[in-house]
Image (cartoon, rainbow over all chains, first blue to last red; front, side, top):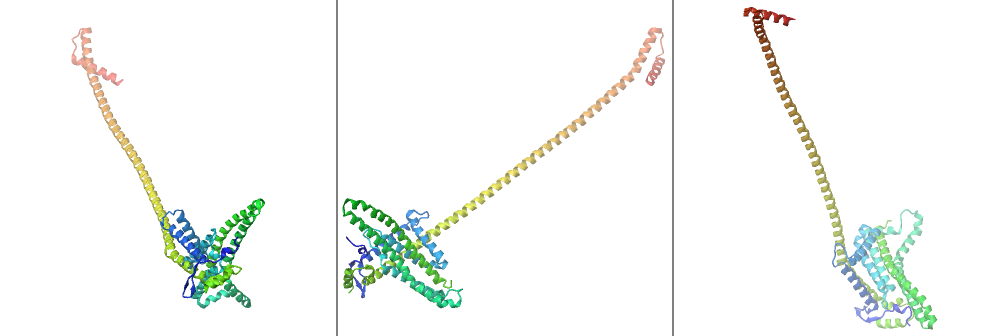
Amino acid sequence: MAGPLEQFEIKPIAEMQVAGIDVSFTNSSLWMVIVVTALTFFLVGGTRKNALVPGRWQAMVEMAYEFIANMVKENVGREGKQYFPFIFTLFMFILGSNLAGMIPYSFTTTSHIIVTFALAAVVFVGVTLIGFAKHGIGFLKLFAPSGVPAPLYILIVPIEVMSYFTRPISLSVRLFANMLAGHIMMKVFAGFIISLGAIGFAGQAAAVLPFAFNIFLTGLEILVAFLQAYVFAILSCIYLHDAMHPAH
Amino acid sequence: MAEAHTEVAHKEAGLPQLNIATFEEQVVWLFLTFIVLFVIVSRMVLPRVTKVLEEREERIANDLDTAERLRKDAEDVKNAYEEAVAKARKQAQDTILGAKEKIQADIAKVQAELDADLSAKAAEAEARIAKAREDALASVGDVAAEVAGELVSKLAGLEGDDAAVSKAVKSAMADVKGA
């Protein structure tokens, strides 16, 4: 039987190299393509008719739109509108990947630290560049909050700098660890069902317990899939807000 | 090179997530698929949703405006109607009052004419009666003289002097009148 970590194996489908860079098509790439295709189908299909009175599908797309639009408006402010498409894509991509991971025999792309870190790094670098582009050197005020007695700056500035640079790590590890832990748990309990089932009638009767727990875990993991996509998106919004208003 | 790394890594124990050899292709495909989704979302999906939401908002605002306008119109019509009814009522009352006054005036006029006519007739009749009485009274003396002459001739056998008789009767009547 497969171990609980085997589900995270990257399996090449087609080995490829372009200009010395490894661009092999793997099960991970396959599921990224599937997720983007499914999201495109969902989003484009829902807005195809663009009716004044929306149907169910269109209402779902509009709900996603308004959910993220409100998130950006409340956490970044009016001037955050230009970053709305990015935050929307980010949220939908992570949510889609997390949910696709719940399909049996699928692959969870967001359970790989390099994927979540790459996304977090884009947010981090983007926020830093926007901060300096908008405020120049004044962006550094972010590290020296106003209203603090001068001697305390010796302590506070290094802390602020450190917390700033741990942002991409905490952002990426949060999502990665949630996906990893959830999927390992499900796999472990699924393993219990098989093992108990192999040791006779008493074992089969007892296997009901891990089975029931796995049903509960499935629900929980779907909740986590939404929650972590939400957390990733809202933290990105909060970081963007810092880039807009470093003096706060 | 990458192939060799991957194969070696597969045999290693531990988290597949820490296999550095797979990082390159994951990042490449992540950015590729993410950018494709970003382009589709920002060029196609979001403008469409923005448009339909704006249209809906506009439509609702327009409908509310229209409703408000129609309500105002209805109110104006109602006010105009009430005004017209009040005016008509007042006019009707005026007409009734005017007619009543006219009729009363007519009645008064006709009555006055009738009164005048009647009193004129009454006066005329009185005048006629007075004249008739006077005539009657005037003729009483002649009749009395005649009767007296007849009496004298019949009773006394005297052929009386008519002039003396009528003179005596006149003086007797004057005594009666005077009494």
